[in-house]
Every structure is written in C-alpha cells, then in structure tokens.
Image (tube, rainbow, N blue to C red; front, side):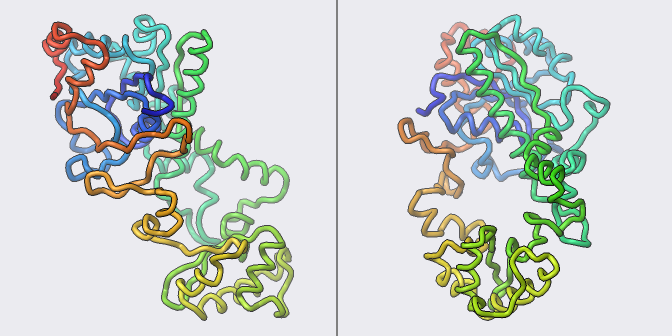
Length: 384
C-alpha cells in the first residue's frame, strides 16, 4: 500500500545512502527485493544486532546471490527484467565487470530506471577512490561551513553526504525518471554523486556567498552560529535551548519572554554588538531550567524550542500527537515521510534477514514454481 504501489525495485546490497534512498521508495509502497550477499561482509559499514535495528533496511524482502559466480548473473537478470528500478551502490565499473551494467540491463529491460549511488560520481579523476560521507562533504565545500568560529570543521553526523545529498536526491532522481518512463520515455541511468548532492544542499550558502552576505570564516555568519540569535544556549540544569528568531517581530517576542525587552542592548543586526547580545542571552538562559524555558516559550512565535535527545524527541507531545514515531519489533523509529493523506503509507516492516521472504517475493513478481526452481539452481537463495 502506498503511492508507489506496483513499482518493483531490485536493490543490490550496499551501505549508507543507497539503502536510505531505497527505504524512502519502499516506505511509499514500492515492492523492493534486495539481492544480498550469501554472507555479510565483515568490514562494511555499521553493524546491527540482527536486523531489528537496521531501520534503513526496512520494508524489503531478500534473496541471496553470490555475484562472483558467473551463473548468478543470469538469475539477477531475470529479476532485473521484471523490475521498474535497479539501485546499486558499488564503485564505478563493478556492475559492468559482473555483467550487470546499464548497457546489459537496459538491453534486457528498456524501461528500466538504473540508479547508481556513489561518493564521487561515475566519472572524474577520483571516481575509483574509496571514501565516506565526511570525505565527500569535505570536497564539496559544505564541511568548511560547519563548526565553531576559530575551531575545526565538525562532522554533521553522516546526514549531509550519505542521506541528504546521497540517498534522498537519488530517490528524487529515480522518481523523476519513473515519471519520464510513464510518459513514454525510455529508461535511463541516474548518476547520483554525494559530492554533488551535498553541494546542492548548500545552494543557499553559495547564493549568500555570491551576494556578499557570507564569509568563509566559519561561525561568523547568519546560519552557522555566528549570529547570537541563531544558536543554542545552556540552561541552569545543563540542558540546551535552540533559538532562531531571524525576523524582527519574532526577535521582539524572544526578548520579551527572556525579560530583556527594556534592556539597553545593541540592535539585532548590529554585528559589532553581537558579543554583548550573546552575553545577555547566555546569562538569561542560565537563570532557568530547560523545562521552565520550554514552558515559557510554548505558546509563542519566538522560534525558541528545547534541544531534545533522540529518545526525548519520540516522546514530545507534538510527535505523539502526530504519530511521528513508531515502534516496530521493539525498535523506535521515524514513521515514513512525507505523508500522503489520500494514500497513506503502511506501517513499516522490520528489515529482512538474508533471504527472508524471498520465495514469497518471487511468487509475487510472477515467477512460477518451475521458474523459482530454475533461479535456485542458478544460485539464488531464499526463504519462504
């Protein structure tokens, strides 16, 4: 069930951005069959206890295939022939060496959307090099903007490269290509590179830089913690509040609630006065606990909210009211987003074990018992 119900996706096992992008499609109802290695690679990505906590692996069914065996290519191609989308996250040239590259796949299935997720892209002098999120956003220029003034760049988890600039933009590319196919166009290759995706996420900063409203001095700008009214402040109990009243009317509300409305303070956009503003805000927030400040700002438009931990976020009244988090097999996780009111997404299913529900998936994809046995003879592994 979902807006992508009826769309079939073959996903080749990978880590990071490709599974995240596939999760987005699966959450929207796409029928995903993941081709897993028969045995987990020992040195790839983070490890989970079983599959319960592998949230980005949810909403799939799995078959196993040793792609190093030449005869396995035939089994993979039979799945590809029946798919609308193929997603792979190998180094450039790997799928070609396996005999599963775009030229072969599109010859067998001309309407196929073939999505390739890499760090550096399919071409260029660095295409063959290993890397991870931090490396990709470093080269994109985005990492240089994140961190305190006078300090070193700070890794923003792996959200900018892997997930925002990687998997999410890959999924958008897949959807755009599917629309093109459904309008009568041919299948095509989606070349998603995290370096380019991360740079695209920074478009607003590039624009501010070009307009003379951003400096390369980290921690001195409007949105990077340089402005004292766009930052976080410690409270009396060692917790934090986030403030972001960019607009003057919201800023005035914040000053009023902080008890600073009548104080002799510099103007909001007077950069020379920012140190004094920061001192005043710091002292004010230290006068109460986070809970007290959260209550004080609860009904205002001052753009001030508490900084919550991950577990706290799931229990916040707003999250509870919207059902923003769900527990699946004992694991708390975000619900599928965005929401579609006319065609809501189904409750997520736990990530599969290797081969789990693979036989069921093959039947749903139109393979009869003879064809399933043939695939098994070619090395395709599966469970009911």
